[in-house]
Image 1 (cartoon, rainbow over the protein chains, first blue to last red):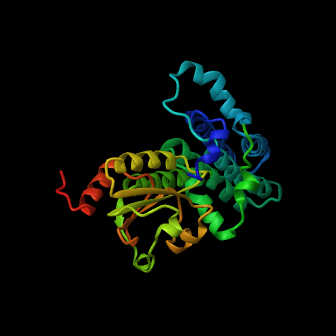
Image 2 (cartoon, chains in turn orange, brown):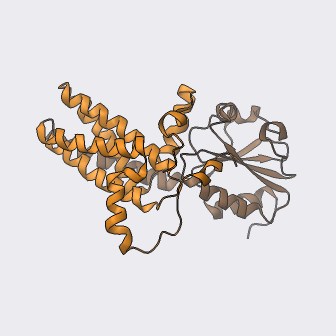
Image 3 (tube, chains in turn yellow, orange):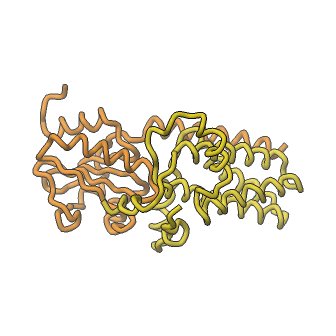
Length: 162
Length: 143
């Protein structure tokens, strides 16, 4: 029904791509946490924030880890059993972006608690996604809509054919 | 060292939460107490109720398992003319979402013939459970 209608106009994605990307993201975030506030963590976090930003604001086709999957892994794998709507993983990228930016603010403003908490949440989300194939949009989106009541969809996951 | 502890705590939390979800997701539960006051009909659903029961599925665009849920329910009801399956976009039906206090998608509620919520499944339903539930509702011997 209406929930699915726009899916036809969006290019579906191999669901293993975002999951693979979440695995890389989890490793990067864990390294950032272990390094702790400092220059090396800052560099890695900027890279991760750009990756989230591309996946969220531009689209999954621009997400660097997704591209890595497409170039390196997918040619060696059997074709996906089914393709998926790109909007759920794109929403997850947006959530990641919010946490990454919060973590960056924590680093730059010398607020270590904010840094650790924000990156820990992003790590939990990435681990859930990669290990359990967890659907972040399923959990958070409706709560967000109920809390704010405004069309988040139009703002963050614009129906931008990608 | 702080970072190592944070990573360890996040990992433990993830595993505990992930396993909890794997165990509880998609199970059939009874209606909640507040549900008794809700009665849904064709005017709210946009489709006629089934003559014995109706699955109402709340979906959203950012929900990957909603598609699998839709297929599963469509498959279960296809040979049951007295059971209907209605899929609603949770986002455009926030009125019903609030009324039934739905917090995530997919959530499926099973209505009886009068449109009263009798059961609720949060997360991707498990097919054997859905089939079992349907047999119960249709008062058929459970195979």
